Every structure is written in structure tokens, then in C-alpha cells.
Image (cartoon, rainbow, N blue to C red; front, side, top):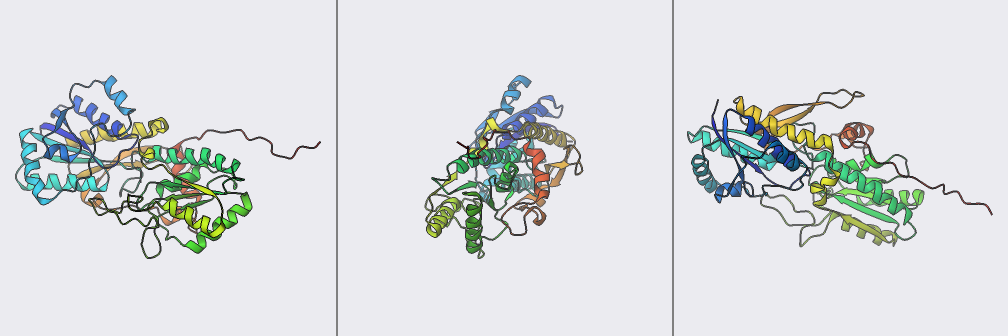
Length: 403
């Protein structure tokens, strides 16, 4: 079992609880007998290449408790895609700081980074371990029941639809429709979470568009018209990555990031919500609005779920425990151990990095309604325990008064 220093980093977009995972790593390393010093990468792997490492020793439990509740990425993040010329200088830096344990918190691209760096080091005769901790509000990482960060972002969406939906309902004489867009490139877990706000048929949302289902303009507009006639307004939630049957993005964006992923709503393109707004207005002549909150879903600490904070912290500690025991090349997973109808309970597991890297996990078909425009009870059973109870509001009796 390796002894030496450790290095931790955060990569990709943040979540409301990504710093709770970092706090778990700090706390685990502080108590470890096999880890000497703990360093942090400033701006992800770019901090290693640029020789900008931070000293993460000396933080006591009081400090890490505050870190757990702090939004965004405390170390700073990066989306740098590693090229072959990067590995030699990275290994040189790892040797300089005697890094034997490598931790990174991120999504599938991050798991690929860990896998490649550790593999290069070991193949070069430098022994080190690498353990990843999942992170993404998209909830699309393979091999885990859910990712740290999803529950809080899902609650953000559910609360936004619950509260913004009341506004849409009460303003229906002004705006006949509202479109709310969530982040989520290729999976519908986050837009689907809006359904947790719905208690009655008239409650928003009325239509949910997920990337797993090809967008059908005719079918969509028919559903919009039906809902508006029935309820007086229509509430629509869409994932940013919804696509047409030919695979082209509804957002009409052609911009890509460094990993070749389409930047939905990026400069030079439009958002999916904007395009849907245009379709409805052109078809029916209605006035409406679209809401694109972008990164707010990824860093709203005021809406973070305690379960999410606790599980994220536990994942960080588990990563250190695995490294101490000689485990490498894996990502920490969250496994749901409770059965249907039982109180929610989870445990930690692992999955090889090679199985996670550059893989995606779409919503299963049994979570999506047959018409592709909403979710099923199976999804609600999955998501409700993660999101938690939503507030209850008061409704006036709207029966017409008699003179």
C-alpha cells in the first residue's frame, strides 16, 4: 500500500455540493496514516501543468463544515482536454511533490483524465493510485444510482417550477405559456425533476421535453394547444440538449467545447427554450416567456439538499479510504440499498474508471411516459426521496362570489 502525498482537484461545471466532497477528502486525508500532505489543484489539471498547487493541510473540522456549505468550486475548475504532450510535464510535477494518491471530482471527462494520468504514471514506472468521485447535476454518469449534486439541482428545478408555475398560472391573461430550460446535454434527469412539483393535473409542468426523446414539432404543438385550452396556460420544461429526429439540436447551436460537446445556447446560437418560444408564438400568436437559468442550478447553495451534502462528503471520505486500502482506478458510486416503499438508504460502491470515462447514462425508458412528453410514477419514486419535501402553499377559493 502506497505512502506519500495526495493531490485533489475539481473539474468541469460545479454543483451545490462539490465542495462538500472536497471537504470529505480533506477530512479523510487529515486522519490518514498513509497520506502525508494534501495538495489541491488550482483550476483543475491546469494547476498541475502550471505548477499552481495549494496546501490543503491545516484545515480543521470547523473549516471543512463551512466548506461543505460553500457553493461553486473552491479550488477552481477547468475543462482542459489532455493531449499527449501534457503527460510528461504532469508526471514531472507529480514526482516533484511526491504525489502517490490522485483524487479528482468531476464527470465522465474527469474520470477519463484520472484514468489516463494514473495509467501513464504507472506505465512509466511511477507507482500511484487514482480514485474519482462523481459529480454532475446532469446525473448521467454510468454505474451510480445518482451523482452528488443532482439532488440539489433537481430540487432547484422543482422549486422553480412550483413557484414560477404559480406565476404562470396567475398571469395567464397576459402570458399564455412559459418555457423553463434546464442544463443537461444528453440526459433528461434534470428536466424530469420538474414533475416532482406537480400534485394535480392543472399544476405545472404540463409538458417535459427530454433529450432521450426526439423532438417532434407537430406532436409538441398539439400538446401545447391541448394543455392551454384545458388549463388556460401551458408550462413547458425542456432540457438544453433536446434534439430533432435527425440528431440536430433544437437550440440550433453549432459551438463545441474542447471535448467536442455541443455548447447549447452558446454565443452564436440560441437556446432550446428560445426556439420553443418562437415556435409557439408563430403557431398560435400567443405571448409567453422563456427562462434559462444556466449555472444557477449548479451553484444554488440556498436550495441544497442535506442528503446531497452528506452523501457528497461521504464520497470524499470514501475515496481516501479506498486509496489507503490500495484500491485504484475506480470511481466512488452511490448505491441505493432501500427497496421500493422503504425509507431511502444508500451505501458506497465502486466502478472501474474505464467503464465510466466518456460513457453516459440516459434515463431508462420506464421513467418516460409513452407519449414521450412526461415522466412516469417510477421516476417520481426514484427522484422524490432525493429532492425531499417541497413547501405547501395556500390557494384562495376561486369560486365566483354571489351578490
